[in-house]
Amino acid sequence: MDTTISRLALVISHLAFVIFFTVSVFSSEKQPNTTANATNHLKQQLATSYHNDIVVKHYWISEKLDGIRARWNGSALVTRNNNVIHSPTWFTKDFPSQVIDGELWLARDSFEKTASIVLRDAPTDDWKNIKFMLFDLPEHSGTFTQRLTALYAVADTIASPNVKVIPQFKLDTHQQLTDKLDFLVANGAEGLMLHHQKAYYEDGRSNSLLKLKKHQDAEATVIAHLPGKGKYQGLLGSMLVELDSGIQFKIGSGFSDIQRQNPPPVDSVITFKYYGLTAKGIPRFASFLRVKPAMNPQSQ
Image 1 (cartoon, one colour):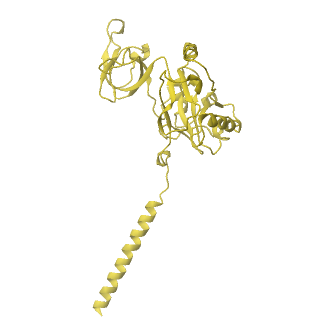
Image 2: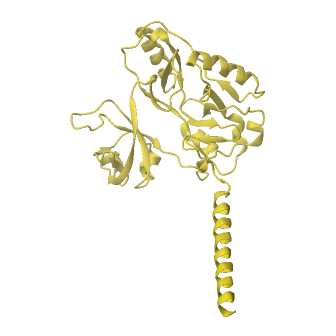
């Protein structure tokens, strides 16, 4: 009798363990995703630098906007890193279920102001000045010319003055391209984007999508602040920065007087412009542009 009871208790204990384990695994698999970063890989096309061995007339050309790249994923605006952008409800109320790539943009030479508006935890009335400038349809299977036609059709369904397609145009020669670049840059533009008319959307760097600027730019981490001399006595003279490659160099130009009084902190990431590299891989004539914005910046 005692042996039978012991065996029965063992069976019941084993059955209870199996039920507990099964319920635990099922529950863990059913936990909902609560952040944008928990979604699948974000297919995203990135540009490569312009090279002059192309047939210019085969490319659609547009101004390179200096804003915050954003994607409408069908339910929310997200950044390039798939972080949710907290836009006003009215801003996206007529957006379609279709995925759209674009740029949140205020005006030329207004990157910092744009970032301060669109990367906050809570939207402000300043969003009324922000434009969502559309430039591609990542899930469309056609060529860029076909995607562009479809993009205009999508934009026509959005009844909002804040949504526009970035104007695309064509030129015939490299000289016309250079002249257009010079004209736009002289008027505050950052540069040009060139997209091959027959290119399909790619994930990652694409040789069919080119960026053309008067200068190059890159990011570096601030390592140290170096004191100024002469008129900059008691202020920032230059910053020692480091590239991802480990190369370190100094940047001493491009700062306003206010930035020299309160320079970007050590360990922050900055964007700088330069004109080619030395034989040792150091950027030539490096000049500070801005601090890389973080999500939800504090109000100034």
